[in-house]
Image (cartoon, rainbow, N blue to C red; front, side):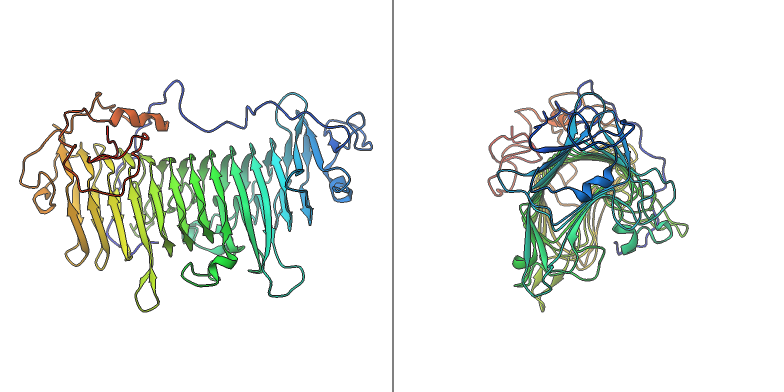
Length: 543
């Protein structure tokens, strides 16, 4: 959500990025790793190609998923679906629990393509759902729904509640989703409302949350999954599933009791998404890392690609995001088109080592919260990220709402030829912008620093190439604010178009004799984008 009503830049979509021969992308579940070898003594077997249903042994498997509800998973922990087979229906487990050493495993067996589960117009739940479960791993399955109409759908749904209906918080632990291919889940788009309704936000790829606010999750991992063509959100967590108004503040004493812990969302490929690729809520700590998200906000007019809200200490790092397609409404207004968004009450979040390119807005915006009276004081760090060819509709960096402090430092920004706003602040915001390297290739680039915003700008290096111009550079204090332009001296010729794959960052390193060294403000001593030890430098590379 944004608080700006200025008219958008309605220029054409960005050009197609170059794709290297070996891009750095997550494991593709279309070609998964070696299938698990089934244990005949501890597994139930399913083969959708079998004409008749057997007794669940590998020699005589079941042929439809309805039998799962009848299985005793205490007797045999594992469920195996044969590769190359297809099932109509769903997998629904309730109160199923393995042990930490002996998890329940639902996976594929045999050779060939992933086993396919078609939800076949599954509404109100998910193609695969877990309720009140522990110690379960689901891997190497293809999940979709053949219905082409919009409805309340998800690929995977993980829920928990307190079944005893008392005040105690129940913890559900050790759930892993690994190597799933989830696609064509027609949820609720809500395009006329930019996908802002709770009904639309709770549909899509993978969702997890409490039903009653009396359940939490620990050690929940979503990794190596491919999520494609789903509406409206790729991966989402909830305090209360489907409720956007009922939340626990990370500034509340209750938060540590109800927040989800040890959450990892890693190495997923998420594309062609109605609104957001990843939206995490109710996390204490946790990581969103090494994901590739692209072609987002393709149906809902608006939507930032990776979003946090009501979290504390969550780290978002080493993700690649491109082709956020946020566009104007009929009234000409546009909102939410960044790769990264620190939304309401994103307490102590860190956004680092990410690669953003060809997005409608750019790298980062904030919709944070700040109230001295209520002691809500979001503090956000944005550092060592790379932005290339982002459009900057409202800003590659857009300080939109107030916070205790938004620190933006040691980022490298290389504009495209059609970039408009590089850095913008709204009134009443608090931010710092320093040690950033800006290489401008646009004739229409600008900075929009609101005079009533509290912003400290210093020690940035700004360079216009032969095609670039920034009309109001003199108002933007930097190393060269007096009109002297120092070339940062990139070690390689810059690519004209963006390159897919986070390895493309190597093109934006600077030479050892660059002015960026020993010209920066000292900052917290953390490694740079490439893992080099900290030293005084401007930009995302310390040398």
